[in-house]
Amino acid sequence: QVQLVESGGGLVQTGGSLRLSCAASGRTFSSYATMGWFRQAPGKEREFVAAITWRSTNTGFPDSVKGRFTISRDNAKNTVYLQMNSLKPEDTGVYYCAAAASSTLATRARGFDYWGQGTQVTVSS
Image 1: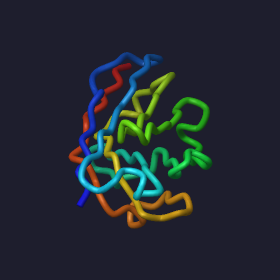
Image 2 (image 1 turned 180 degrees about the horizontal axis):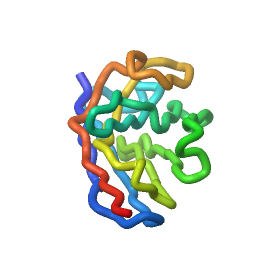
Image 3 (image 1 turned 45 degrees about the horizontal axis):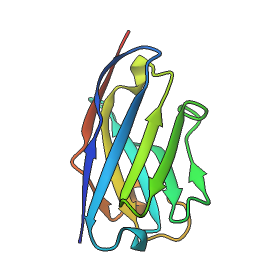
């Protein structure tokens, strides 16, 4: 079992930045080859935001955040980070951390095995 706890969400103005963290506990963090972030806005489906493989060799982002968001992980600290810059109102939502055993980069929600409770990000215009 893996427990994931997100932190770092909050209220920020358009153009601002936030850094989300996800602390993992339970099974050995590096056992989960891919870590990801998803978000869900009210009335919308959960969407992929970013993912990173175990050795940080591969990352993935949708076009909507590419160039603005970066993902990183520190396996020694059992933590994955999402740095969000140039935030827009459409980035508003609950951000979820997820863990997958996939050795290839997973970008679909069904590819992830464990999920955190989420942290709210609100970008004001």
